[in-house]
Length: 390
Ligand SMILES: *Cc1c(COP(=O)(O)O)cnc(C)c1O
Image (cartoon, rainbow, N blue to C red; front, side):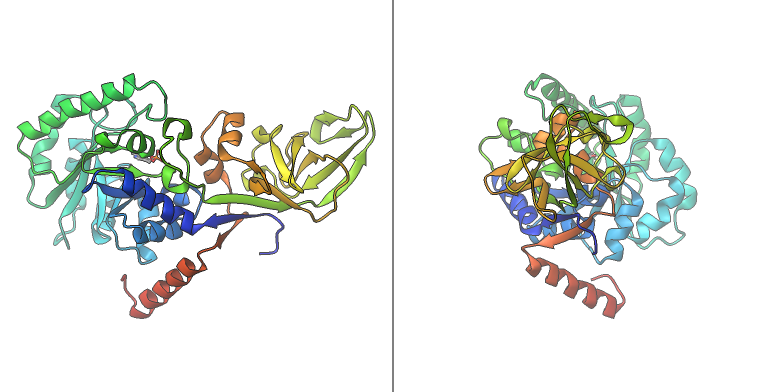
């Protein structure tokens, strides 16, 4: 890595967060670690292995390619793909023992043509029910009834029936309760059809932490594993963010009163002032909407001024600073810290939008648990020398 901008990921924070989450849940509730979108930007393989070390029983990703990548790297835990795959991708999914999300009888009808002639194993599916998010899943009884014969087939295992909440992070819990009650009602359809189902699950991070009693058989933990959770609503637990973001002061200059800075003259000095340039921009995932946020230099806050460029941004400095000084965009310097929550509030989004936006140009450095990293490298060597998945 030759760049002066990088991100640090604490693997032990990921593991400790998972261990803490486990402790808050009733016994026998399984943990599904969600490592979609490159582990929310933290590294999918690393996140998956840490989750496994912390005792997660299953993994989830959004898309087939993400699951295949985990398998290629020797991850053997059960993996659920949260978005339905195309029927013609069925063979690939069965070969790699992936669990599929299914939402319609027509999918099964089409998939029939793509089933391997002598399949290696049964097809493992989770049926997705839409209880009010309005994104994916069946929402009416006839849709369920139409699916039942397909689910009953001898070569299909119904590993799960699940739904996803729309407002689990909101203080007002009325819609969450409504969705939960709808899920309970829909589970009656399943019971009536006397179909064997291995697990029911509905809670993501916020719901699992706030209402462990809604956990059912399994919880799907993404955000909280990386340290993102509605802190005010769950004061009983303390999770740590795993990711921090750093750079270096590249240039320092004095701006005279009235002088401009940034594209489109987006900033004008109203008095003489010190400004600095930091080598991170929107091509690193630090979007122009971050204009006006603060970062840390020499343990002090400095505001991002002018439009954020593709490769750099400019800041107003508290005074003259040494070029080469450490800059922290997310994380601590001394007593000061810039939190995900603060940045997310500024852009009107959630922490995971910030971490998933960081592009490949920002190298992830895995800190503290060099130990975990070593274990990972060893696993890779073992798996490649055997030429097979461990
Ligand atoms: C992403 C996702 C999750 C994880 O949600 P978090 O709030 O990040 O824990 C769980 N379930 C589904 C269906 C998802 O798409």
